[in-house]
Amino acid sequence: MKSLASIGSSGRSSTDDSNINDDHEEVSKLAIASFQAREEEIERKKMEMRMKVESQLNRAEEETKRLAQIWEELDVLTDPMRKEVASVRKRIDMANRELKSLGQTCQKKEREYKEALEAFHEKNNEKTQLTTTLMELVNESEKFRMRKLEELAKIVNPNT
Image 1: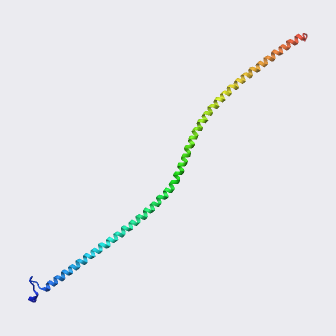
Image 2: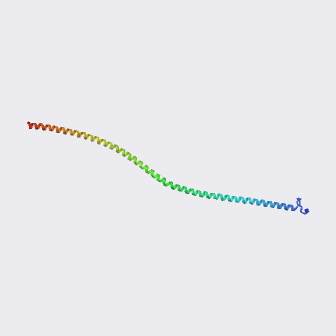
Image 3: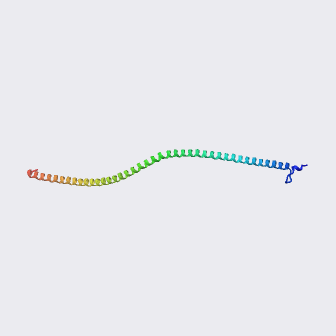
């Protein structure tokens, strides 16, 4: 049995109190250990998450750099072609303006040529008619002179 000295004012013995205190301490220690284990787990998971996020950020930076490099390469490929195309288009526009001007000049010259050709043909026809008229006049003149010569020859030589 328990001695009266060990029973306190609460009616419990001091051994019971010490067992309860030990139990409380043990429960507290277990609670603290459990809390610390959870805190460590949370810290570990937090560190893992930071590492994953940092890893993803690094990959994103690398991907951004890679995409920027690809973009620059596309610009390099596009720019010379764009400049060359613009240059060719500009030359085509200049050629079109020159062609238009030359076409107008050509049409003007063709009209002038047709007018000159028509004038040439008219003058050539006039010349041909005048030549024909001249030939007729020369023939008539020759015939007239031949008749006159024959008449004069009859007058000079009546016997023939």
